[in-house]
Length: 583
Image 1 (tube, rainbow, N blue to C red):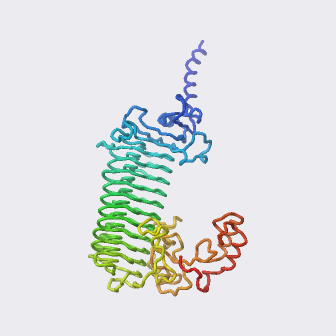
Image 2 (tube, helix red, strand yellow):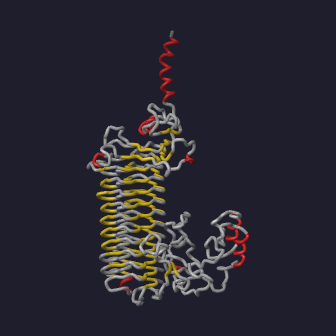
Image 3 (spheres, rainbow, N blue to C red):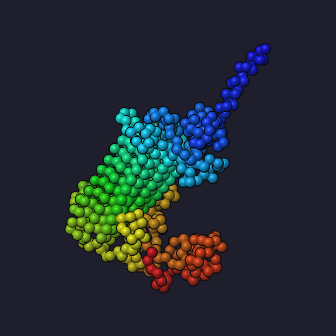
């Protein structure tokens, strides 16, 4: 009898334990029948909240896989405060068809998975979720991957109810990785797409479209620690920082684009304070009163990036109020209704290896307008910029007050009266300034040096900065800047051009691009035809290319070797006149 009583007590406990056993992966499918346990696609949960609850209360879940469909956080209650709250240590992943056995089988674009805040009357944002997704657990980490996050409406004053409509990440000493997501159509006072404070936010391969902040950070509001890689931000609005508002910590933006943002200050990016590196990125077609592309009062460093086609009252390309540094920068076809078509400096600006071309200011400083503190311009080109007095030297660079020094620069109508050494006024003979689309001020602008440019081998090696922003992402920040705007080798000697600059060969070129003669057979684009190119042909032998297909017949073989042998040694030693000079 005692045994029977023991079993009556124990068996229900065991059944509950088995029923709630941990699953390394939980599955969610919008069309699944009710009462699923999430253990497989066949028995998937049909409500994402069920999977999050299970992962939160049962140890051992590593990931939640969500099949295509639309998921709303409120469970049909209409409660605006409900949200998809991420779980510590659990990766939430969307973009599945609902049949995959491996993450490698997932095709995110083919299977859109939407987390929607449109929980009330369809297309009426007034009753939408305050935050579609949240992560607010201190000292934890989580992952959000492969979703469309839309329709957040953080419009209730008080607490966090007006922050982070798409995603609210507010957790001390926590880390959140967000990948392959699209944030769109959300509104908040701050951080309509994403609001991130106190923790470490990493964004990879994310897009942002039509997010609106009534105050700061239309797409992204980030304080403390931020990394953005390969993200595209477009059509965002805010008072400050339509694309990105950054403050107070360390931030890094790599290979991103900011387009068509509109703000009072900082149409693309607003950097309030802290250290922000923008690397290999494009900031185009944005508008603001100050800083159409970028407004910075912080320690900003932009490397190998493009500011083109932006519009502002002052500082159409960039408005620099703090310690702003631009290296390998192209500043092209920006327009200011007041001053500083390319850059307006009222801080301590350092511009090195830059090319300013065809910018315009209605009042003064078509290329660069500098006032108050200091500006240093080295190894840079300022050409065909215009303002109220025309396109002479004062339109290229206008000093109103403070110190200005220009060294080894190519400046239209150079007078020699500005402090510095080694500058000149010869036509830089730029080619391809408008890029393949033939229009200046667009993302493909690439004003490179022609084969007869006086800027080739005419810079000053001692003025090339260290690679403090790690432009080539190799982890070495103590080396001299190793690459140009195109990612090619920065120090390259052109054997057909006498050195006129300063330093031991190879002497750096003036401007954002290092000139390179493209010889047939130079597969790796290092300016030489040698064993490295032959190795690439061998590596890709008997394949359709394009790597190694030197002769353009669509295949890698003996005919490509023949081309290499014909041009062997070009770029290594002096050669006859280049049959196709220029890039």
